[in-house]
Length: 263
Length: 268
Ligand SMILES: Nc1ncnc2c1ncn2[C@@H]1O[C@H](COP(=O)(O)OP(=O)(O)OP(=O)(O)O)[C@@H](O)[C@H]1O
Ligand SMILES: [Mg+2]
Image (cartoon, rainbow over all chains, first blue to last red; front, side, top):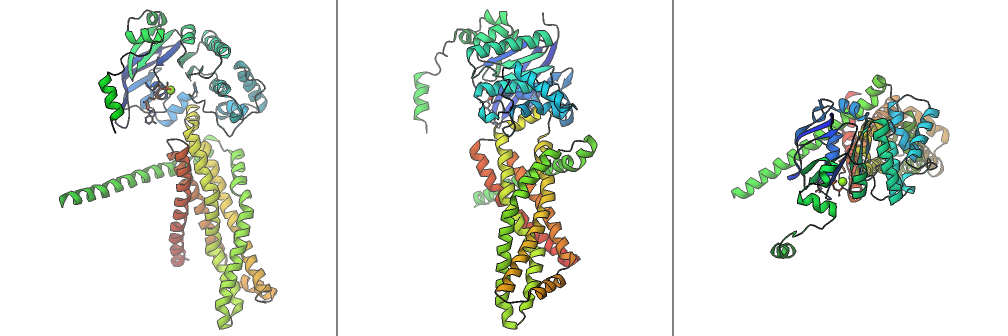
């Protein structure tokens, strides 16, 4: 089923100070598919994404994209690589000093020599795609959280990248807009054959859009495989995740006593 | 007391290492700022004219009133203080020399630099710092845009151009302040005050002042940008770094002023 992989990660290890964040991850992200990264809050999903786009250097390990290792790239090669990808950050990360239109136009102005009229049309198309037409002249501070998310997606798609990385695109969206976004993501895969990596917590959207799932738990890889394999997995943590059960026996009463009495 | 000696040596070592780390970071930043400001426009054809002009308005044009007012007052103060001394020897006309020379050589550049550090250096640190905190800097990188090229080089160009311009204004208005006081309060004839000022000032004085001004502009930009990029946490750290940028840019400006003054004293 999986013909070839777009990204291959080998033995990725990350530390912030002494704290081990990602513990020896190895997996592949298939090409022209939607890969969902799931896992509890704070397990290192955003950190993993930052590694893949070359913003953070891991302590060790390699990330191969098209046969080349991102970890070993210098700044110029990384910039070359980043022109071909689009990223939505968890906090949208729109530039607050610019209007939505300028935000979306920014990557186009930077990397392509086009006249203003063409850029305007491209921006309008992207904004329309995410349902934000008419908001061109708004500043990010004037938008709601969900609208910022969608503007961030429009910016990520500005240069029609080969790969898109979305960090929790559905967070803060109403169910209808979220469903529209799911449709958009699937359209990008089906029509443009893009490779998409989506960090998500939404079970419904996960089973709607994902072809491939990667699950992290406290920095460890506990699952990588297709949606079907995920659904029928016998792993207790995955079962709990799917049935939304709270983690049992977090700590025994004695531990709890120690935690609350510690100074 | 071996323990005390140990910890003292450890302390010195730690301080030295952290100072070295700062020096390394600063030199990397200086290197990339100069590359993106002076070399990249020729190799990549990317000169950010629009944002440079908007920065020039912010750091230069908008500072003119405050620079002018402060320089005018300082000119008056200088003239008054010199009059107080020169009266004793009956050489009141030398007020013109004192005011003219000290403003162009020293006070014009330094006053302007301190005002600009307080207005624009802090704004640079706050702007870059809050962008860093909101992941906007990461977003720029992820779009293949170098943050130094996008954020710092327009500021650098604007400062290198506008700080000398502001300094000229400061020199001129300061001398005007001295003139106004001298002709009204001290009763020096306007014609002779002007003539005396022209005789006292040498082109060299003005030029050395402007050389300093260019350097101060560069220093303030680098310090502001460095402090901004150092932000890794939230809003609280932005405030801290902003304050630090003002304090350390004023310190660096005075330090470099000392250096230039010694240099010019011996070599011109
Ligand atoms: N700049 C940093 N310095 C130190 N520790 C960090 C830093 N950024 C993240 N961490 C730590 O790394 C771990 C993983 O963070 P990350 O943001 O990747 O989590 P996440 O899986 O994206 O969580 P969420 O679902 O809440 O977004 C956390 O324990 C966090 O405390
Ligand atoms: Mg996250």
